Length: 442
Ligand code: PLP
Image (tube, rainbow, N blue to C red):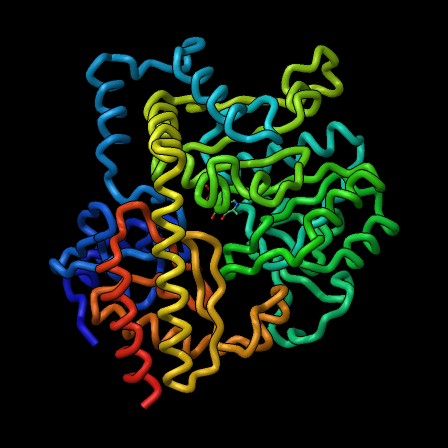
């Protein structure tokens, strides 16, 4: 296992001024690696090691790192002194809004924000403002940011994992301290892929909205079973709650129209981030015009406050425009390329595990994939937590570092290919996985 002395020294120096040495808690991984630069499918650390990157910074880099087309668009905005914002309307925000509305049938109008957390926050506010109700439903295993509504009641403590019961029987834990207890009484976790648990909540509480990643991509790739998303839509219509798809991870990564287009299920509201601007910080909330118009309601009791110094900042806004242009090029050739690589990766991994006699399955959606060390594809968080061999997963990830392959160093974190990856990268990685598996299971 290689050492990372320079990385360790930098992190240790950082800890004097930054708690834990990192600026987002789960970047604190073991071994700690400090990166220096990135281009295309590759990243280099401060020791000079090169890694094929499958982490993509938790998802944004759908075109690869430092995409020239996107960066040139940003440079032009800066060089032409068009980086003004905040004084009034600029010429870019309307252009981006129209592109998104054109790309996604479920989106009639949008607002432009900075982070996914802000977007999910505003989506829940719109749901509450429009219904006059306060309760929220949230399938477990999803992640929607750090704010109180979505960080309370997130995960079941490990001691009670493994049983599939209606979710409100579980004692849930918040993922953050400092959240008033009242929030937990308003946010109700349910099992993913379990419509019954949603209906049980609807009978019990007046539900304002349900927020859901249409594919659970923060615990690998847990796909919706046939009929699940359609069932959520039907329950939203029956009980009058707002259906919110959190497409911060799935949107623009799997298709221009996001997963709502691929699945054919129309949410009332949808949020995007990450891949929409290939690594530049921006997020978007969009959906039904009557809901979005609450941001400008003439009735002050119904108006939802929309404010943000950096909303529509020209740098990320033009980056999003350029990213969408690249994704739309040649009828979505980028998606075709990533699908082909994803398919080769999945088949290759399945073959490696089979040959080695390792119990494993590979879940995939287009460019995003995840190997689970269990005998079936997980259907929800409880299934995954009870059956996945997270220790083996962690060992393989660690071993891969020595081969110059960067899977994020946390079990169950999904891997992402980009437009910049090549078949050679996939083949090299498959060989590295075979050798790593052999090394950790011998
Ligand atoms: N929603 C999903 C599905 C996410 O994966 C994330 C971040 O990982 C968020 C929301 C929060 O986005 P941000 O980190 O930009 O606040």
